[in-house]
Image 1 (spheres, rainbow, N blue to C red):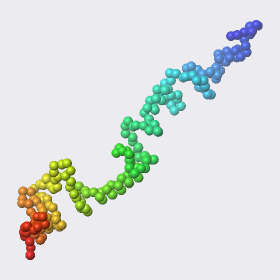
Image 2: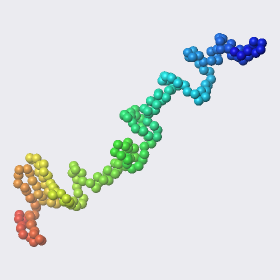
Image 3: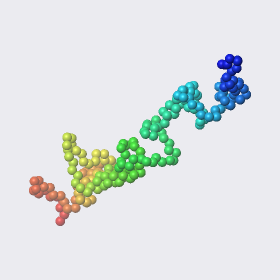
Image 4: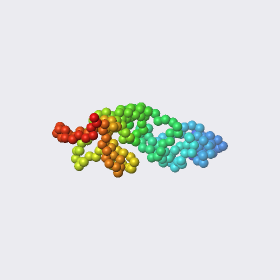
Length: 206
C-alpha cells in the first residue's frame, strides 16, 4: 500500500482495504463461490466467459456447444430439411403456395391445389375411356407402329363367360364362349363383299 512521507496511506486505498476485508464486502464484490449475486450489469469489455456448463433455467448463460446443438436440431425459417416426422397435433399448415398443382409428387398440396387437381382430373376423365368400362364417342384406330402385331380382344376368358363384338346392337354380334363354337348372330343375315361385289349371302330373312 503506498504511503506518504508521514507513513500514512492514501485515503482511497485505505477505504478500499477496509471495505474488502469488512463485513460489507459482499455488497461490493462478487464472491468466487457464488455466495452472492450481481445487482447491476457486468460488462466484459470484449473478454470471454469460459467453462460455462449447459443451462438449466430460462435465464442461464448458454455455452457455444449447447447453442450449436440446439440450432442443428431446428429447421431454419428460410428453409431446411426434416430428419423425421412432423406431428402437427391437430394444427394446420398455412400459407402454402397456390399454383395450379404442386411442383413435385411429394409436395404438400393446399386445398386450392387439391380442388384444381380434382377439376383437372374430371375434365381429363371426360375424354378418356375407363378401364372398368365406358362408351366411346368417337372412332378408335389402332396403329401398328414398329410392333409385329396388335391384339384387340380377350385372351383370358374363363369357362361360363363370353366375349362379344356388338355390331350396332345386342342382336347383331360376333361372340364366343370358351370351348364352344364361335357364333355370328344377325337380325337380317350376312352379306360378303369383295371389291364392292356381293359374293355370298346367307340366312337372309324374308
